[in-house]
Amino acid sequence: MRHRKDLSRRDSLPAFQPADSHLQSRRLGIRCAAASSGNQNPSSSGASPSDPGLAGRAIVVVTLVAFSLVLCNADRAIMSVAILPLAKSRGWGESVAGIVQSSFLWGYLFTPVLGGALADKLGGRQVLAAGILLWSAATLLTPWAANHSLTALLTTRAVMGFGEGVALPCMNNLMARWVGKSARARAVGLCMAGFHVGSMAGLLLAPPLMGTSMGVGGPFYIFGVLGFVWLAAWLAFVPDRAPLVPTSGVAGQEKVSVGSSIDAISGRKTEDAKQKPSSRLPPFGLLLSKAPTWAIIVANSVNNWGYFILLSWMPLYFSQVLKADLRQAASFAALPWAVMAAAGYMAAVIADSLASKGFSVTAIRKIMQSIGNVGPAIAIFVMLSARTPTAASLWLTTALGLSAFTQAGFLVNYQDIGPRYAGVLHGLSNTGGTLAGIAGTASTGYLVERTGSWRLPLLLTCALYLVSTVIWNVFATGERVFD
Image 1 (cartoon, rainbow, N blue to C red):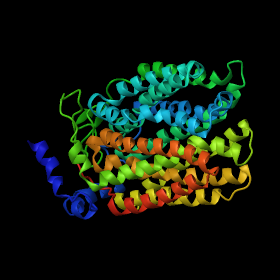
Image 2: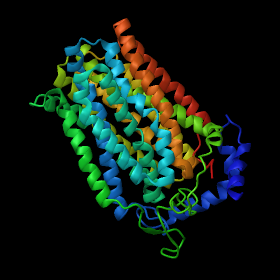
Image 3: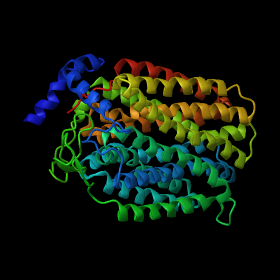
Image 4: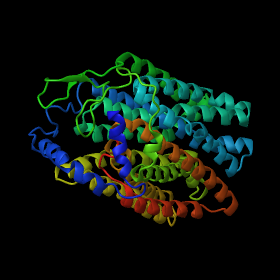
């Protein structure tokens, strides 16, 4: 009954009103005391004695999660290059190519919520292992499917997306369980750096691998096998439960496995599903009744709209509009993802620095998200006027580099508003993001084929970034909304 009361006391929060004023009056004293305690700590990390930060086995976990996200994005990015010879050899237009590109998202649509809920209940280790097993097998089968039929190819891509849909919710769950709150933004930044490096690796390595005796299937075979190598390392080096870490103000006085999560904000201990089994479903109605949840969903949706358009279509854009050959197109389209990886980690460091200077979590999230939305809108708009691959690549690099600042905005906001439900919140927002990615990827192919121009879909993307910025700044919060 106590848990039900703790949840229901948030019900007085209006469904579409900013949450800050409602919550701050009740939590300001607690939060300020916690913040001042952290800021006065003489250690360079700013962690309190009860905060394990990023150390020991947690470093191994973060590293392997980052590598899993390298493979996750590389496996989807290689189709952005392979689609060019596939479409040419089969006589596909941009509409069919857009369907092939978006078919990955058909499967991806179904697993973020499921994966997040299972990760919150069972732990991210098992769920992530199952996901990479499935998507690596589908990656290996892609060349066979492409040679068999369009239906087989679409099905294989959808199965691959089904497996990959658990990756980011599991990442959020694992970071909440293994990494202390003082290092969590940096840990997420490192993992997302791996995610963006995966795009770069897929785009850069696909052309030379396709030029080998393996042909178009080369990158699918290589990255598929690497997934099974990663799986063996994950099962060998990452245990079911995290090591014991202190949860009280005196180091070592009270310890708990990070398999029982430490509340990201209050420091209170919460039991995980293995220690306290429960058949209850997550409170979806409550989660979806609050404006901050919808601010995250909108932010994720617009982020994915832009992200998947740029990931899926930029090689073709460079090839068609700027007359670059296949290898040049892939290289120009890959550079921005390398910058995005570095920029995402830099954003996390800046966010930590602002926190140490007394900025509220809400202010930090709004600043970072605004940079990550307005910056890309301006850069994409200017890119439309570029006349050379080098100039276009510069503005694309700027757009994606600035968009990485959202990693210190909406992407860590799940743990701010509801650390207990971080996985399922991520899953809910990823579902909205996946629908937006499907719509954006498919509609771009349709609009380009119908109008013969890239201008309309890219201008629409700019407009969506700006609308999302307004919604975020009105409704988002860095305060705790759900117990």
